[in-house]
Image (cartoon, rainbow, N blue to C red; front, side, top):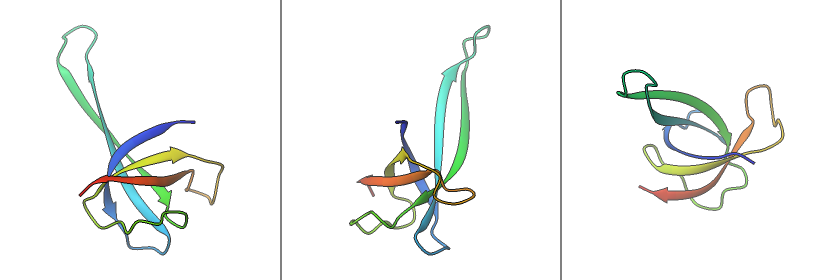
Length: 79
């Protein structure tokens, strides 16, 4: 199971949060740090903690829950 950490950027739909996950890696030739980000739609129905906009959360891969939801929020790391 894939586990990632990201920031909550949207809570507009019911039981769904959009989480932005950023990763940094060194370019193979130039050795400059490159930052890439991706947005994941995550399920909130199993989370007992209240999640607000801007929270840092941990998400985990799960079975497909809808057309776009393949992750769920496991826990809130920090505000």
